[in-house]
Length: 86
Image (cartoon, rainbow, N blue to C red; front, side, top):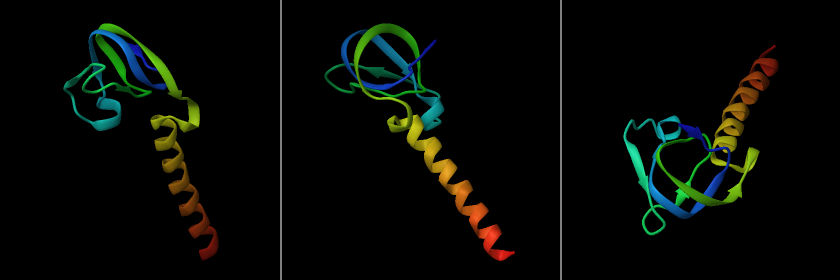
C-alpha cells in the first residue's frame, strides 16, 4: 500500500499492480510493465510487487497536482462570479 509521491516511468518492475482508484474511480488493480503500461501516477497505491521509476513530474506538475489546480481554479471562478453579482 505505498503511496506514489510523484509521476514517473517504470524502468524496472516485478509483478507490479497499482490501485488507481483515487484518479480513475476504477476499483480494479492495474498491472504495470515496461512494455505495455509504464506510466505511474502520483496519488496511486502500490498493491503488489515492486519496481523502480524515473520521476517525470512532482507537485503541481503531477497528475494529482493538475487535478487539484483545476479544482481550485473552478472555486476561484465561482468566487469571482459572486463578487461581480454584488
